[in-house]
Length: 165
Image 1 (spheres, rainbow, N blue to C red):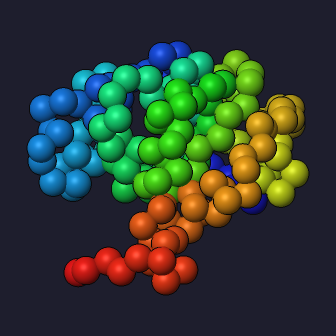
Image 2: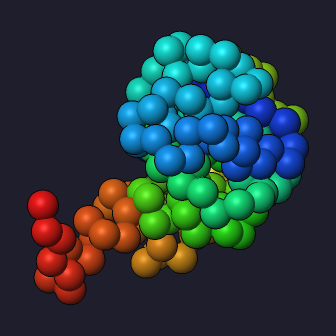
């Protein structure tokens, strides 16, 4: 069970908004610090580990830049959107960011609201109203990779790759 406060974004949020292009060649720390800086300056300073991001349709459209990693590095407990761009969703899997689709979530909750996410039963509940919506189930292997920290940590633990440090 995941429970957290909501930071809400609209529809068609592209990866340029999530991770601005001017930090693309910078360190992960700088990329993380710049998350959503173009639309919400200082976002990385006020976002708390365990908070949730809720968005409308087509979240993460655009380039394949590692914007999902920046959200994971912020401590985002879960991204829930009405729909998630397929390329961005795969990056969420690969970088270990829990990302779920739930049609109607952007209309259900307001910024600052609180959600409880029950992955075992594939549903979420808005704490203030008690309203419940179904979550689109994620294939078990993809969910295991997201919850396991991403593709490289999972493959390393399974002995399928050796990561040199």
